[in-house]
Image (tube, rainbow, N blue to C red):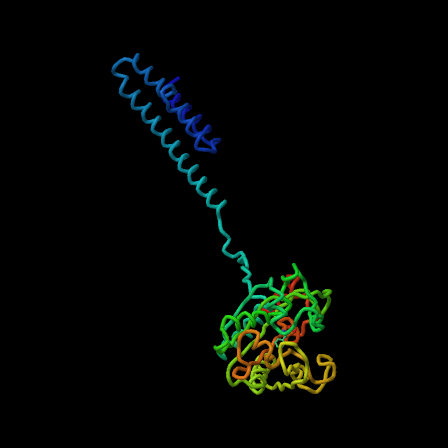
Amino acid sequence: MDIQMQLAALRAEAETALDGVASAIELADLKAKYLGKKGPFAEFMTQMKVLPNEEKPRFGALVNESKNAVNALFEARREAIEAAEVAAKLAGEAVDVTLPGRTIRSGARHLLTRTVDEIEDLFIGMGYTVKEGPEIEQDLYNFEMLNLPKAHPARDMQDSFYISEELLLRTHTSPVQVRTLLEAGGNKPVKIICPGKVYRRDDDDMTHSHQFLQIEALVVDKDVTLADLKGTLLVLARKMFGEDRQIRLRPSFFPFTEPSVEVDVTCHKCNGKGCPMCKGTGWIEILGAGMVNNAVLEATGYDAKVYQGFALGMGVERIAILKHGIDDIRHFYTNDLRFNRQFR
Ligand code: PHE
């Protein structure tokens, strides 16, 4: 066969073979087969050696021309395969910028924490410092020095979790008052609030919890009167329940205060007219308070003829329940996000 026809056939064959190539690896193999040292073009060159000298230039030129053409086919194919691979990679990694974003939910402080913070802020603004104390407390500080000696009937008001004869889970935050007064040494004014967890042996239900939060306030100084207490209570009631609120004090009893009062505030739902919230009375009881009992002042080293004081103590859950119309105290502790999210 004429060399030109042979070369044309070879080129056509390579072209067909190239059509079936899909990857760079297959392409390299095929290139070795046609253009490598043992390929057909190399073979033609060996044939050239035996040709008469005058035919060699034309033959060589034809083979080279054909070889270059086939080589160009391979190059074109290589570029096409590379482009296809890049395109496939890009398609695989494509980002759909029209997809909706992922919502990042932000957390929020728990309603109880917020209520504590709100009350703390109010008192800090009036010059109080925040004092904390241990939740495992000595009977001495929780009861005895608060004018509640062992076997005192008023201890029944606060059913307790005892750990030993002398240790218990504190039933109120009042022991922090005792500790602070002792620290002050009987001759310095004291103006503190004590927030914290307290524990009582109650059966948990809609309105009771064996663990809850209290905040107490204590002011001891040389000219402290019931009028100061009353003014403080009014500020507190208005801050928590609205500027239109009025308060009233009813006589009560706590061993550590004398006189003692229960504090009522006009109902924030009906403004004192009477509604289910205030059980028709127009008043809601919010906390207990009183003038620090002389026995407590004396026990902590203060001269009761020189120093007087007032104290008030409130349940944080009760305040939050009243303020936000919550129907069950247990909602605070069950961590149901549907409840928590209502108070962002
Ligand atoms: N400690 C009292 C209680 O838990 C509350 C209180 C505090 C009353 C301060 C009067 C003065 O019941």
